[in-house]
Amino acid sequence: MTSPELAIHEAGHLVAADAYELPVSIVSLYRNQDSAAHVELSPLVDQNIRSAWGKKDAKSRATIAAAAITYMAGAYAVRQAAGDSGDGMAWDIYGASGDYESAWALLPSTGVGWDWMKRKTALFVALNYPTILRLARELQTKRIMTSGQIRTSIEGRSDGLHTW
Image (cartoon, rainbow, N blue to C red):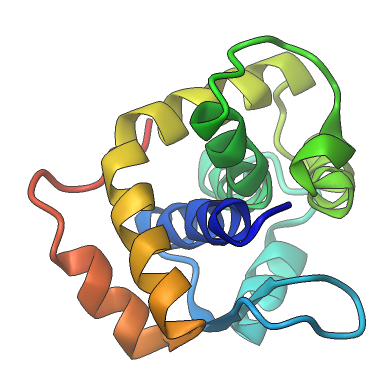
C-alpha cells in the first residue's frame, strides 16, 4: 500500500475505535516487525473482549462486534478510497489479512454472521468517511499520534460519528 492508503487504513481503525469507545494507545505509520503501520489498542480492549467472550447478553455481544468492526474498518476505508464497492474477499490487496483473521476469530461470540459484519462495517465506513479522510491526512503529516492527539483530531469533526 502507498503512504496515503496506509494512513486511510489506520484512520479507519481509529475512527471505529473512537466511535465504539475502544481506547487506543498510539498509531504509527512507521514499519514495525509485523506490519508497515499499526494501531495499538489499549490492553483494556483485550480484557473487555475476554470478559465478554461466550456470554449471550446483548452488551457482551455488542462489545465483541465493536472490536470486530474496528479490525475490519481499515480495509473497508481503503476499499472506499479505491471505489471498490464489491463484496470480494481480496483482503491482502487492502493490507488486512491479519485484521480479517482477528475479526473472524471474534465472530462466534457476536451472535451474527460474517455477511452482517461486513455490511455493518461498510456502512460504518461510508457514514464516517469524511472523518476518516481528515484523520488520515493528519496522520500522514504527523506519522505518529498519541491517544490524546487522535481524540483531539476526531473531536474536530462537524457531524459526530455514526455507529449503527
